Image 1 (cartoon, rainbow, N blue to C red):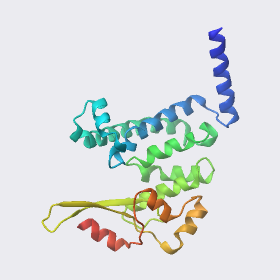
Image 2 (image 1 turned 90 degrees about the vertical axis):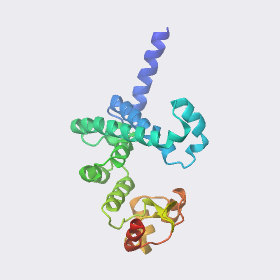
Image 3 (image 1 turned 180 degrees about the horizontal axis):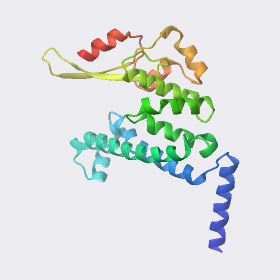
Image 4 (image 1 turned 135 degrees about the horizontal axis):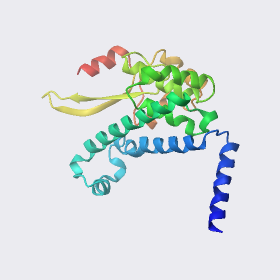
Length: 228
């Protein structure tokens, strides 16, 4: 009886996946797992106080509390590299694993793995093609476009990317981190562009989500801050 029930559940899950437009349930499951790994340490690394779980996390990982931030950063990079290696194998076989193949929201898993990799420039044409075909939300491609422009020292288009530099005091010692939204091309009309790309928030709201007070900054100002 238990075997029959398990079999019935698996059949129902497969039917449900098909109903959602998933044509490869095994690949969907693997990508969901890869995305979970992508987020495993990132949620702590991006949180200044580690979500208030620093002590318990250090104990669980058997890492000295003062070494925890560096440990998490190294582990995140190691897992990112492993994820990318597997994703490249998947894309070599299927192309971009989009909505038709793995359904939503799994269709964004590959995007985030690439977004967190050093190979954005290599794969952004694939991301753009997937977005224009409706296999991936267009605003995700917009995020990657902004990140690549920022990495190249150019103005972003949609205002999705923030950056921070450690400032130095008069005595030359490191000061507080200065966070800002990377300079935007034609900032006056950025919210209209965001709306057209499918974003539901404004550049000001996105900045607040990132913990940044939004202000318009020129590329020259950003580069001068970087030099400091």
